[in-house]
Image (cartoon, rainbow, N blue to C red; front, side, top):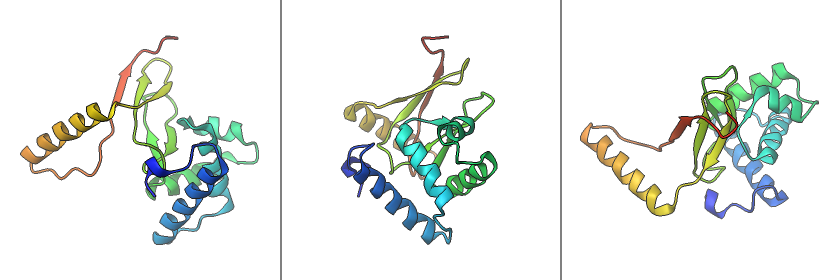
Length: 156
């Protein structure tokens, strides 16, 4: 199932599909999908936006910061969670693609806030082609891309 065919984010079918995909991915890498990891994924899926570790722990008081950090590390290394470095004190984390629809970010360099942005499909195809051409010219084999726009948010 691709991200485009996933059920609507926030509904229980979407969450069930996410758990199924993550459980399979972790099992292939010989990791267990523990209740702590499952709980962490649920917090992030329900938030629907990148979160810092303090945000994650605040969203669910049953998550201990130390175990949440260890679980995030395993989930990042397994390709289930994506770490976004903003240059602020805390990295942000979100579910990785293809668990989410392909998107990019606007990152405020002053406050560290992150806003998801989705490019028009024609623009996305143009970006893909341009990046593929550049990669090909340099003997590089691309797997995927992510673009982050850094600047100042409306509040800063």
